[in-house]
Length: 280
Figure (cartoon, helix red, strand yellow):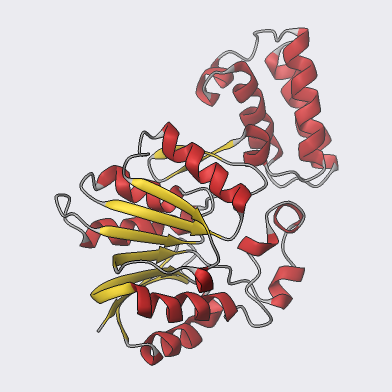
């Protein structure tokens, strides 16, 4: 069968199952199987697939029809300037989280040697992205999930960062270490109401431990801020991803634990998403 024929059929099947981006999803899945870029796929729609490739494509489309996220099907997600391996043990990296990387890189000179800590590291995408652009710095990533730590270690190995990065399976409450210059974190911050109303792609497949922030969405943020106040050096920085709805509560917690708020950034939806603060 030709590319165009199987794509058309897959798109129709995905539409019937209320998948939001049927054309894009089918094209990404097929280009990944063929090991070509999506642009090349679209320029060669009259080419044929092998029976083996068609069988795999149909299987993966069936997975997508059941709302399995495309990133989990492809086993990768692009974040910042790199490609990261992902599976159902880790949160899929999102564009909004790149604000953490962007803010850190703006404020940290390239030749400076700093010690970073990433709380709730997941795939390791935040910490790895920062260290790739700050070659004299080192970092530690912690996560309560052993499976997530395995993914982060794999990504660090792929990016050739093993000598400057370490990943530890630990709850933030039980983590004790030396003082850090900068702590970054994308903690779970979705409240009970919003969690119930998440898209099936997210709620049914992405790890709840990386999403659910308690009844009001603030419980993990509170833990991260409190612990960071002890782990940071004086004048060290804490960079957090937050939900727009809990901005006021987060600000109050930062002030309570002796943080000065330097900057609050908005995402592409014009919602407050990233807070850069300094311990005094």
